Image (spheres, rainbow, N blue to C red):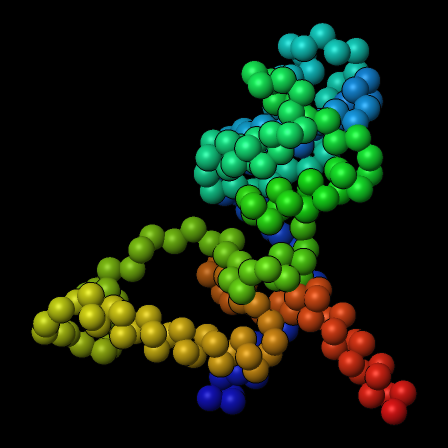
Length: 217
């Protein structure tokens, strides 16, 4: 088992792939003509394209710019969730503009959106790993367990397939827990289905602090 542990490289930093796409984005737009006011919405296209559309249709003298964009598996539902979370800051019930006046307020809002929705497209996986054990950039079909048992050379079965599936899931979860515990890291499923491990920013800070304390005796 130890040999299996050691084959995984642990990364201290790992970018979200530029080519990764979920089902869409939750975006936050800013405009220098509207200081302290931000548009928060959803799009299934590129956020920059949406910003350009809004800039050409609102008549605001300055163009809207993408302050942040978050990968979303369900953009419409996530947009509703975010609008409800920031309802106290909403300027008008029928518009997607929110008043977040100071730097800390917008920084806190961006952090909260990331926690509720998913990774910011320029995020470091080490930061995402602070609150997630699994990070997947792969889109795969669900395994046909009957076919997979034969393809892996395991063989057939008789009885309840759900019980067999649950057993395999439990075995897999125990193995994954051992890997995570051994490396103090989260598991990243890459776009090519390969596996990487990334140590969270919080864990790195704790380990650095602990190492400093030990060196100081």
